[in-house]
Length: 104
Image (cartoon, rainbow, N blue to C red; front, side, top):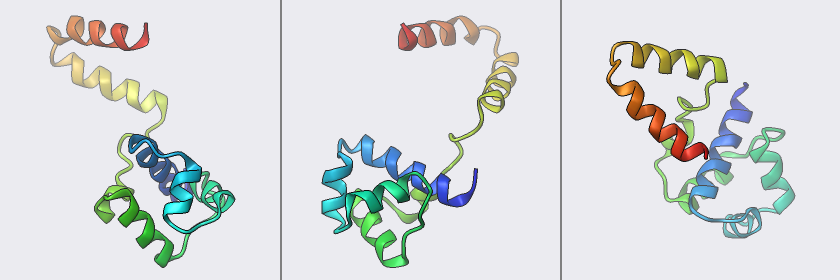
C-alpha cells in the first residue's frame, strides 16, 4: 500500500473514531467533501496547509497520522498473532473468548 493510501486510510480511521461524518469533517477543515473523499481513499494527496488543518481538527499529534502498524495484511496479522500466542499457550483460551465476543 502506498503512502497516500496509508495516510488517507489513517485520516478516515481517526475521523470515524471521533464520530465525525465526512461531510462534517470536510466543513471543519474548509475542504470540499469530494476532495476529502479523494484524500481518504488515497487518490489525492493534500497540501501541507490542509494536512495542518486535518491534524488540528482531529486533535492529534502529527506522528499519529503516520502510525500504520495496525494496517498490515491479513496473513501478516495472523502470523504475528500466532507468534505472540505460541509463547503464551495459557492465553489462547482467553484470546479465543475475546475474539468470539467481538465477532458474534
